[in-house]
Image 1 (cartoon, one colour):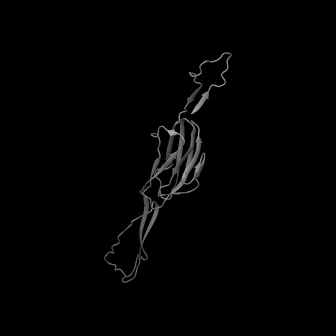
Image 2: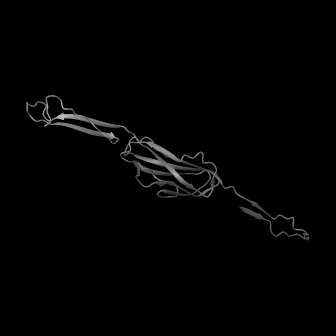
Image 3: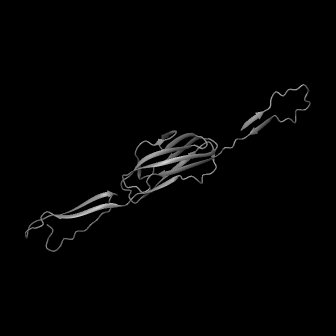
Length: 205
């Protein structure tokens, strides 16, 4: 609230009635602001172990200046921080980004590098921005996108090979069959089973 007041009213005459004078007027500056917060990821369908980057973008569409802006990003289970987050402005102390002040029309970003944990193939992992606080009133939060999902790939290249140590044995000879399973990824193979029924002509030794 800003008050403007007329002072030092002087004239040659005597003002016989100052009661109707209104020497001050107030203005109350609007405290509304349209802040748009968006969460994105550079790969929404990563593999296990893959490095991905989350980006938080904050746009001030005004009309007020945004001051004392902070927000939180708590990483969900399934991803692990892979380096120091990089803010274009302000400072990061997990899980809070202390943005500070954003002028009308300006944009700031925070990039958070993570790796996708092993054992997450087939999972949907949601990362959400929380606790957005500032001195002003955000008049329109409908344009905010505070959450982003990744769907971890569930594909794997499994190679199963059956070999024998002697392909031309004699009767009564001991031989060994070997089953080799190689996981060429990218996903972790879980709950894997296979059968090997010995054929007629050989006996388990």
